[in-house]
Length: 104
Image 1 (cartoon, rainbow, N blue to C red):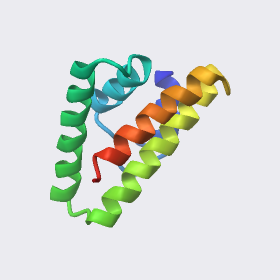
Image 2: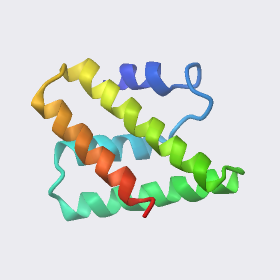
Image 3: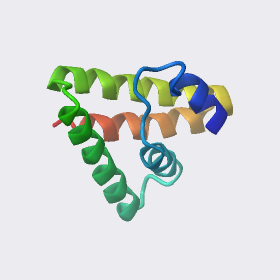
Image 4: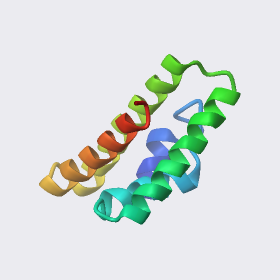
């Protein structure tokens, strides 16, 4: 899964590399979405990325585009590694929802 993630959003394929902590946290959230502690950690990491992108000059619409690209890439990675199964779809839906909530 890590190799697929690097292929999809690594330095060679994507202009901005996402933090390893954020990616790991999103995968953990997808695997165990009912844990409130995991949800809190992911939310904190997302806010940290959000502010980091803002500090690097990205506007709010640019950050929204970035998060949509991240959610889309995450869904692609899950579908590639797990196949188009119910598990990959529900895990990707959890991540999509979490990324949407950070923008509210």
